[in-house]
Amino acid sequence: MNDDVRLCERCKAAIPPERVEALPDTYLCTTCSKAVGGDFEVTVVPDNMSKGGSIKKNYGGWSIQKKRRTIRPVEGTQAAEERGAGPKETP
Ligand SMILES: [Zn+2]
Image (cartoon, rainbow, N blue to C red; front, side, top):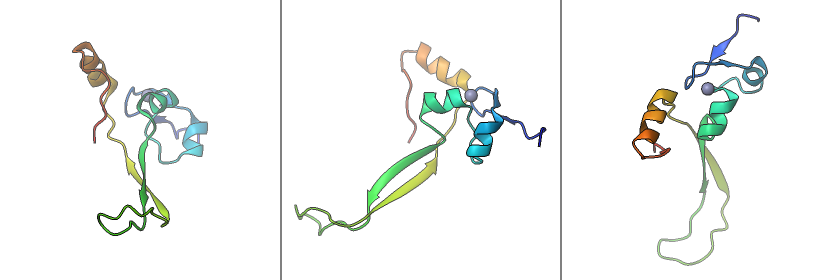
């Protein structure tokens, strides 16, 4: 299991094996995960909306949608920040 070293998609650093073990889906090192907000974009959506136009509260359940975040190499992010665009989330 020692050659199970994964490199971060963003900064190409080795991802700590403990992180890979805990999050087998991860493509990011701990630092980049914090910087971009994690591997996944998580959205909570209501299961059962009221009729259109109704102001009644929604008593339905909630679902969690998880989608893999677009990871850009760290060089691209720095270039964008230098242009004054700042960190930008891609949809
Ligand atoms: Zn990284």
